[in-house]
Length: 169
Figure 1 (cartoon, helix red, strand yellow):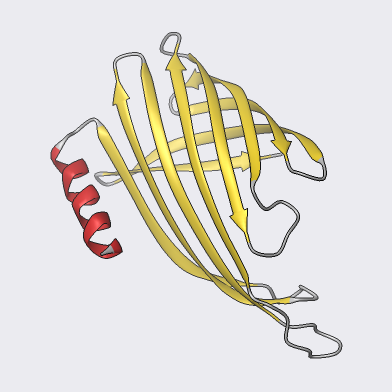
Figure 2 (cartoon, rainbow, N blue to C red; figure 1 turned 120 degrees about the vertical axis):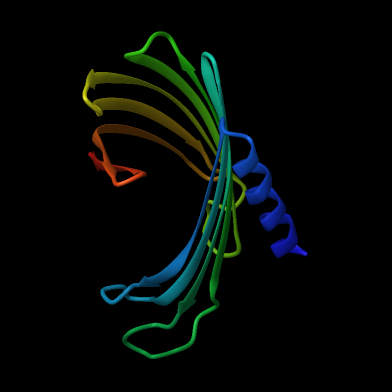
């Protein structure tokens, strides 16, 4: 059933030019981790652009096998699901503002049922080069976290495809 829904979403998005769909999957290698061995990830993102804004929705699922590297004891596997949404408003061709929300559900960490609220701004310098600054407030049951991100990006074309390289601190 899940494959049918994803296929329909992808097909619908291709018909409407102002929508974007990103569907990725992969394997994760945790070779330097004390407990994580390897994992699989799945990520689905949908976005809709209109004249002065962009609305995005996303879903991420990670499944990670775990064992203790010293005692070799098996540990419970980690299963994480993240649901996210964001709204980006374009002030003009160079400046945009963003608000976002993430809900985290996992089976092991104290971040289960965590909520992350974000605000940010982006500025395009020109020729596909720009910078962004974001602030995130994480609301977990036993604790809270403040995070600041500064990123620089450069967009470019590979034939007919568009790509972007990003550096985040």
